[in-house]
Image (tube, helix red, strand yellow):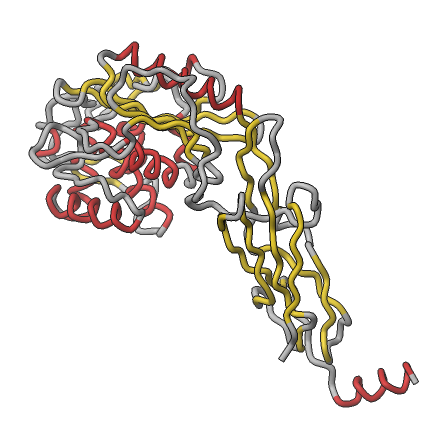
Length: 386
């Protein structure tokens, strides 16, 4: 068995060790009293690391209005990615879906709309009728789809959320939290196609009859805040005004969530305040790059003598501007690998810590297929060296 060796270095000083993965970070970057918000609950999270840069009652159970539709959006995007639906799939609407009140795009009953048009209507215009139409298409009825929403929430670790419908309309026992909403938006942002619709300011929905409904993005920050490219609003008398949004500048993406603002202006202003605080005080430091080899080890009886070793995934940590201390990495790596090797073979681990606390463990892998030397090739190689 190959021996294991370990080495510890400061990862901010080690160019070769550019690794950490997306996940929950055990140690917050910093607590702050610099941000004063009037909303009931709020959170500011860095996207790559999941580090919380600011929070206020972030796990408090509160109604979040139409931010519930984020889960409807996520499940729809996952159906699309799985190939169970295409953008051109035609969906027949029902009387139930078209009768939804609140924010809507006034879909007609018993006619066909494309999946793309319904999805865009939910993402841009927060359409209740389009949300129910999607729910009924995927699971037959809204109740079955809502059960699926709750199951997915548990899978994502959203422990402070329970859904009663797919729209966010007031309902008994329906609640979420700022933290869970940030987790959910983070998952949505992984789907590149989402940004095709979340960044549109104005559009229109052409109904099968030829009638047109104007679509205006309910998230004003898309137009007025530099770098904002996604999010979801929500507003009811019960929930107040809510907003989950994402903005990216340079290499750093932030997620802010506001729950229970007293009015629409406040939710946008306080979300922008959180973004300003994050971009002004923090920066993203790419610690590990999965595209850069971090080491090389010998191959025993292989057609290639050495093989490059890579981190299985990249990671960027968020740090206070001007303060890049605290991170360390330790490597456990085999001192050789036996041929044949295959892409994805695990040969070690990188453990990243911050101030002694484990942040992430990432596998070190081989990315090459290296064949075993034949008897003739082995003999020839020995004689050649001799």
